[in-house]
Image 1: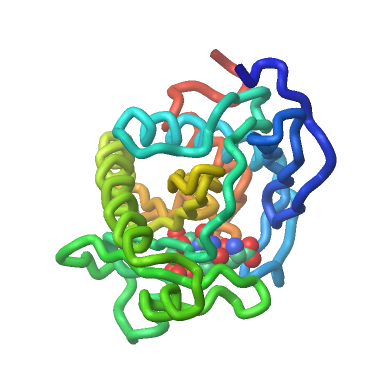
Image 2: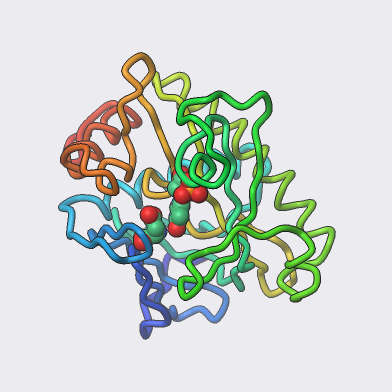
Length: 245
Ligand code: TMP
Ligand code: ASP
């Protein structure tokens, strides 16, 4: 259906992606850039191949979610960096799932990085660059009209299902899924779709054994070359480099 969809005017420029209108009123055209940012845009760089690695990994993982029964916004891969997706209204609740303690949960609660959680934990953050994505709970979403009760229950349920699929996937590749962030949106019928992206930008991925970061922490914490890390991760996922196969 969407084979003939064409790119339209720019709708929104994000930190790592551009969202364009498309020739279909029900679809957007999403382009993955090479830009990397951290700490809410304070640190910036352009990393060769980053957009392509993220786009190809996200398309692949979204397909896996779809196969696992989680509806997603993905429609068509139009190029290595461009996807046509169902247009959604993004729910302003960033859903983080954690299996191992790292990042903000350690800072907020004084926990040691690397502590394995007894159960996967779902946390909500209010999606607001101006406010630095503050932690939030159901009462805020309900009172401020960001989502209703069944939607919050669905976000938790779907996020845990995504976690189970991703954890098994990364585990087979010798990688521990520490945590990740996903976003959901409502389509024109009010159905909730997994949206945005599933990428190493929004995940913590540790090589088993060494606990070496294979994600954007390499950039956030100056642990090495993010481009090299992402190309290595791509090879782990697809079994070949970017220009092969
Ligand atoms: P956190 O430990 O900083 O709360 O991050 C948890 C996960 O969410 C981590 O995998 C990185 C991801 N994340 C984003 O994708 N975007 C963001 O803006 C932030 C702060 C985190
Ligand atoms: N996504 C945020 C930024 O790009 C924060 C982060 O990932 O560290 O600035």
